[in-house]
Each structure stands twice: as C-alpha cells, then as structure tokens.
Length: 152
Image (cartoon, rainbow, N blue to C red; front, side):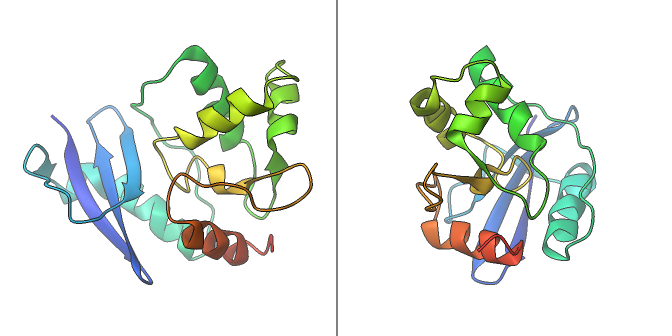
C-alpha cells in the first residue's frame, strides 16, 4: 500500500508518497488522481516534517527510502544526498565521486529521474559553467530552492 499526504509551500503543492518502509516519491502535485493511494498523516508524518524542516532551514536528517532505480541511478541519488544545504555540485563532480568521470550526460539523466524532490537535492546540481541547467520539475521551483539556500 502506498500512502499520501500533501504539503504546501508558497504557490507549490508537493505530493508525498510513502510506504511503511520509507519515502517513495516527493513530487509537485498537479491535481492527479490519488484514488490508488490512501491518505495517511501518520505514515507520511516523518517526510512531511522533513520537508517542513527544510523550508524552515532546520536540519533535515536521515530518512528511509523506498525507491527503485538502476544501480547507476541509485549511486547518483545516494551521492546527491551528501550535497549539503547551501552547497552545490556539478554533473562532472558527481561523476568523479561515483567513479564515472566521463558520464556527465548519463548523470544528468539520472538526476532528472530523481523521484524525491528537495530531500534528494537534484536542484543543487548546476552546470560546469555555473549556470542553473535543467530541472525535471518546475524550473521556477529550482530557482526558488537555490535562492532559499543562498546558492544564487
């Protein structure tokens, strides 16, 4: 069973999807049909609080994940979690850290497939030249998150 909750921040609504094993997805919510999920504040509470802490600039801490991806994607996503609040990285740097220094394009694809916005901080990845680059969600949200963290 997958459980859900919604979190509002400014003009965005985030959809939190979780199982009893961990956070499954954190995405922007656009009035999708949620009938396949069960609303549950208790199971989603830890992830709701993590998101709330992020926006209040408090420490996020560790959390359980229940996500699927290729081993390459999982390596990229786990490396992204290590990028601290207020810090940034590049696709190239991520490649070096996972011992795939020539894989910037593949890393970009993995970053774009990240199922957990904000908490697996794909928004902290910038291009080598320092420009913002792409974002799998609302580009205005990426700019907002980077400003929130003092990165830009």
